[in-house]
Length: 104
Image 1 (spheres, helix red, strand yellow):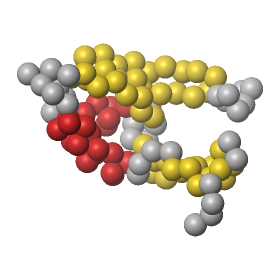
Image 2 (spheres, one colour):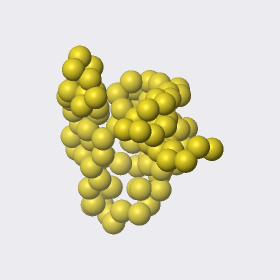
Image 3 (cartoon, helix red, strand yellow):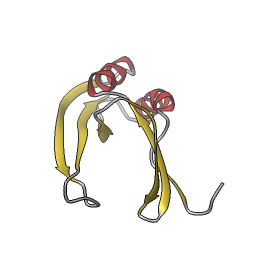
């Protein structure tokens, strides 16, 4: 494995367990704020992401919403936002922002 490898996120299949773990860590009534990808991507690699190798995978927004609820959370707010990609004058970044609550 090359030096300076950046692991940006988890494989999408591992994210399911992460949501369940986060749920178990939070006290009853606590909020969790997160940003997730919005598109279904099985596995992506970028060879030079700020000078390092980057990889990621993600689900689409509807699948994330479903997984969050299945993990026990209540969705308080979510929004899909588009912003400029800092590495490109033409590309955009699209993310799903979520505020979720562990019920009391």
